[in-house]
Length: 294
Image (tube, rainbow, N blue to C red):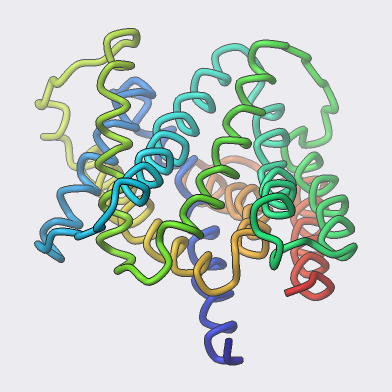
């Protein structure tokens, strides 16, 4: 792997994590008119349609094993991750979810050590994780330090983090040598298929008049086209370049970007505690990248 390809991988992961940090503010605006499951379904349906428009070509896999890989990626990286995370928010504090879901890089590292011998993390990765998770805790609890333990909510959040780790490892395997756009579209297809049965158990409606409101259109377009279609492409390419472990470390950036986006878009206050947390998450990310193997 050349130096330029490594740099491009880091840039793609950084941009993606930064954009995903803005999705919380956008989702919060949409929650005024949409339920959480509706936001998830519509954003990925829009992403799937968009990817067909930009590349109307069929993906030829040539084997059931690859297809099974995409099925697992769609279930874990789309359906399970987002549904577990959103349902967890109904049982526990958002601060708990923000901290716990950020352990996804550790799960990724453990799975990589088992299934991808060339991606075994070094000591620097775990040093970075420790520093970053302290920073994320400062951002999430924002000086209140009220830890409301909720077994159901916390377990669902852990399930979300573990689902994302599985997705990252699977994509690193099945996407090798294939077109990233077509692979991402395949993941979304199976994500939507696996999501359909779940819709019957949640508050879901196809009421389309909500899309006549410009604010809803813009925020859904941001989530579907930019944060889903384009960002998943960049993330998957970063995984193919850097590996699942190094790429997933950029998840530490998401809470730091989120506080800035919330301040700009929602007029939420940024405290010194949150600023200190953001600095620590950046430091933790630097540790993970600078002193990790690979």
